[in-house]
Amino acid sequence: MGATARGYTVSMQVFTARVRGGAIVPEDGVTLPEGTTVTVIADSDVDGFETTPEEERELLEAIAGVERGETVRAADLLERLRR
Image 1 (cartoon, rainbow, N blue to C red):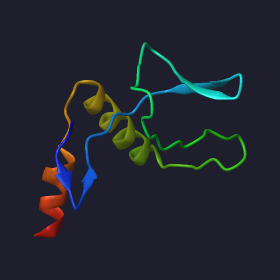
Image 2 (tube, rainbow, N blue to C red; image 1 turned 60 degrees about the vertical axis):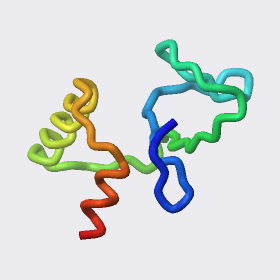
Image 3 (spheres, one colour; image 1 turned 120 degrees about the vertical axis):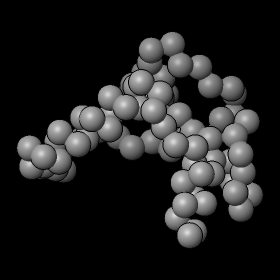
């Protein structure tokens, strides 16, 4: 279990899921304990967004960093923001 700040668990994971039979089913072998609370941000073909080439490059670099495990603990980020 992750560190807590102000009573909230601040550990999280990002994964892809699909709706199957009306239920959200994680992909890529992700398993969650029964009763896990999740936040869902659904892809939509209605409200997309545009980026400049520079913004796209930065976004792709950030995603690659996460995939390499280059992350910051939420508790550490919250501490930095308080300064």
